[in-house]
Amino acid sequence: MAEKYAEKLPPMPKAKLGQYRGLCAECHVHPVTEGQIDLAIETLRMRAAVRAPISGQAARGDEVTLDFEGFTPEGQPIPDSRLDGVTVRLGKGQMLPGVEAAICGHCAGETFSLDFTYPQPFRVPELAGTKARFSITLHTVARQKKPALDDAFAVSQGCENLAALREKVRAEKQALHEHTAKQAVRTALLDQAGQNLTVDFPPALLDGLTERKMERLRQQVAANGSTLEQYFSLSHQTAEKVRAEMRAETEKGLRRRLAVEAIAEKEQITACDEEIEAEYARLAGLGHTPEAELRKTLTRQAVRGAVLSEKVCGLLAAHARLSLTENIKEE
Image 1 (cartoon, rainbow, N blue to C red):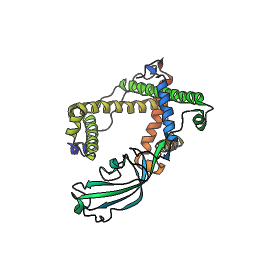
Image 2 (tube, rainbow, N blue to C red):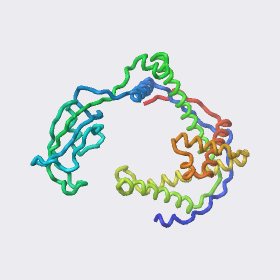
Image 3 (cartoon, rainbow, N blue to C red):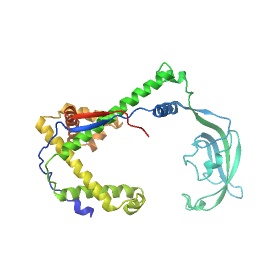
Image 4 (cartoon, rainbow, N blue to C red):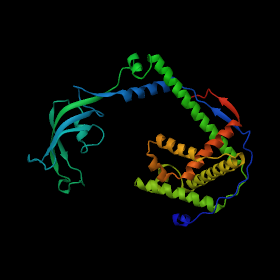
């Protein structure tokens, strides 16, 4: 079926503007909870944590330095099995199955052995299914240690004391919530403007774009070693339901696009070269992607559309009737 929709799709239809000024929307600004502040500060502590040697038993998540060598049941060294001074993060699956778990519970300075059977299949065919005994010497065990939650930690984060740090985090969270609410309002207003358009989409256009989305989903699922049938079964969905939802979202997206173009034309809103270049730079910084790489995947027309969309959404918000709801309960 994918081949059927690989052909050129019908052109975009003309649209007639409906109401786009004086639209109504509700702005939900979620409150900042004490729990959110606690979690944010805990994240800061995790980022500031350093690994320090411990004398206790190694555990999952610790970083260990060890010597490692495998021997046959007869006591002969297994070729290429010796590792000296290797550093391993326990729990990351960096060693053979079961070996990392065996290291847990041992302390730095210990030498111990482990009986092991190589899995089958194995990357070295002659070892697959054979028995071995590993000798392990554990040199160091280091564990992540978070800084104490006190005024000294607050000072390291640029604040006078812990109370000031909490207020700083609260203000940052509040600004983020307000930005999220603002973006939600702008999207809702653009959706309304799109719904108010008068436009007839050719069924072949919606069907073709929908099938392309289905094909992308099929490729993503296949890359994970699965099939669409298995995906639908695990997600308790059907192909018909997913396709219908994709078709509805496709039409909504087309209406947004047409609304932006029509409103921009009506209001004489443009995107100049300098603004397009600035948007490329902003997106590159946002995604930590070299701008040259970004330009290979993001066309100038697409960036122009993003700039126009932002300007149109600003106009819709400026002329909308908004109601503010601040006290929304957080789960």
